Amino acid sequence: MLSFACETNDDLVSIREVVTAAFGQTDEANLIEVIRNSQNFIPELSIVAVEDGEVLGHILFSAIAIEVQGQIVPALALAPLAVTPNCQRQGIGSQLIQNGLSKCRQLDHSIVVVVGHPHYYGRFGFQKASQFSLHSSISFPDEVFMVLELKPGALSNISGTVRYPAYFEEV
Image (cartoon, rainbow, N blue to C red; front, side, top):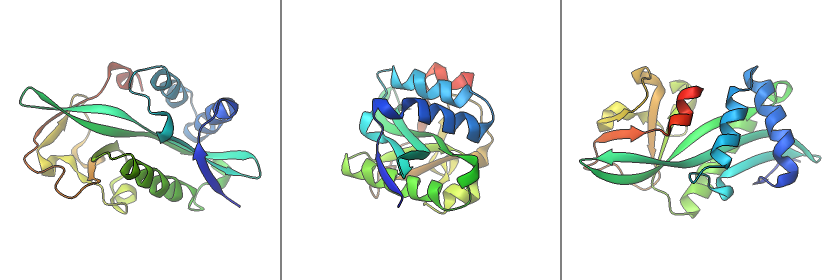
């Protein structure tokens, strides 16, 4: 039976293996390690999907800032989401997102940004960030840079730039 939990030290090697296999490269796994060692890491928001003691998927939400007229509005970046290749298309990624967003709400976060497939993330309520006059410090195609209000109205009167930490530019 699939269960979800915050990562533990025992999961770190498995997370790296799952993420590397899912993306076919180590860049995203390296990003997780950099985030884990940064001030933006939120341990409760690094979540694994586990079945029979095996890590099948991982999702990470980390702190990020939206710069609005010289002020900072806190937000979260969802990145990366990975499911081991032989378990993809079985709903594990969707369950990780739902579980993760629920945990974000429990921890009183208001806004999540993601760079990903619009049809996939749109199912969870993500919308183009440009609709809210949000732009990214990293150049992404408009349709893949998306945002979700975890609290209704969280994006009211907010227009500005999502400031990605420099380590995101290496992926």
